[in-house]
Picture 1 (cartoon, rainbow, N blue to C red):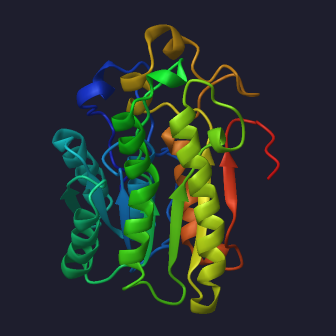
Picture 2: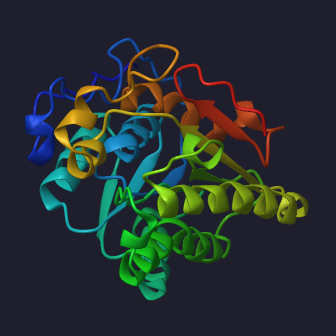
Length: 281
């Protein structure tokens, strides 16, 4: 029986000030139980792309655990949307920069939801800086610990529970494939994520665990409003071939595909959802 689509009329926090409001799943998206019986752990699942992935996975029949830092209101809204799809949603609050928390979050997912089949490494941060000299040691360390160290920690812990047919999906970025002059440290971590995806994928082929990634272009999320100035926000996404930013709803299906058996012969690859920018590599 088809489930009633989750309503998205409540936009807490930064989202309340976003015009237009982010769209997390299209009203036309019909689930077909591609992930029935699966459990997914999604870092950065409280908003943005992570929320879109959470809702899409739920509509496809998966229970979801989401990791978030301190955005309680946003996290509870994501839980409401997941539960509206008839699935369980576990909230895991903590700092992904800390290896001990990553281990705890994976263990809690398995303990409370019964298993772990899909890990989505998605949490990230960015601090635009025009001058490389403005990137101090703390910013550099925080960005790398959040954007790539955490991916290692979560993957290593998840591999204690993932089995044949399960998968890991990492969020990289178009900035890993082209210059991003004001996001030097951020784009460096995204390049690392791309290489991490490819190397881990070949490492795990014997275990039949797939590892892939999604590389978003400009996507309309709270992270953009929180980190860019008003002038940048006004033109955000206009550099794409489609002359606009993407919506989180346009990213979710790529993660569903990679998480499902439809992608059973795909590993070590990156799907580019970027509004038309041609990427080679």
